Length: 393
Image (tube, rainbow, N blue to C red):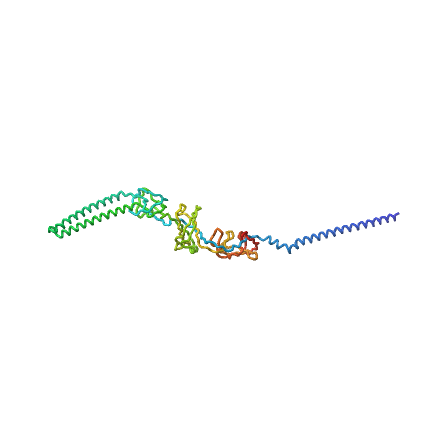
């Protein structure tokens, strides 16, 4: 009985042993599966980390490079232009003052802005005293003429008596001298009258030439004297000019006869003019000279005002760049170009005229370079970039 029981217990143990073996086998399978999964994950990670290193980094780096817009400017024929500033003035500014002895002003028939003709009276001076002097001189002529007539009559009678022997030759000579002196006194009186009349005519202030009255510096009741300050200023013929300030190099590129467009400050109108004189000297203060541009009269051209002139200076063939491409610093103007390796390179340039098409580059470029159009100020020398040609280039 006990034997059987023990046998059964042993069988049960055997059975339990077998069951334990089967559990160990399942656990091992699970471990194997987990190991396989872990290995696959490691392989995947290794592929992601190391597998792309041979192919993707180049594309990724290219995507990270800054993209810049470039242009190839070429060479363009541009009409040379020089822009200058200056002041407007009368081409022939005539100051007019009192040329006679002067006096009190009793009338002024003109105002600033009026057009006057040559010889027109600008101001009338009181001449009441001078008129009396002229009348006195005219009376002196009559007195002298009467004496001359009497002397001539005495001489004529004496000549008739000489033939009869009643008058000597000495008496005739004396009477002749008296007659000549009387005639001379007549001429003196006449000259004195003409002098007074000329003085009186110079009392009035008249226009020396036709033109536009720019200034009136006298009022009725004012006493003026000869040689005093100018009482009027007249622009002869109304002609105006611009005194354009130019550097030495710009003066060397222009000459008399060149056309210019002048625009006064505050006006949208542009006036055509012509250079008629170039200053023969250069100012020591600012190293500039003056080009005088003749202009016809226009109400917008006011002497003393400022204006801008655009002067034609001949055609040039050179690259033309937009203003955004040209940079400058202490060393001067420069641009960034992109070389064949995609690296940004600084290129010093010399700029010329500014035209509606852009800035003319006279030195530093041949027109075939790839010039950075914008954002050049954010680049550094030698930086690798991704160039992209601008549309239309």
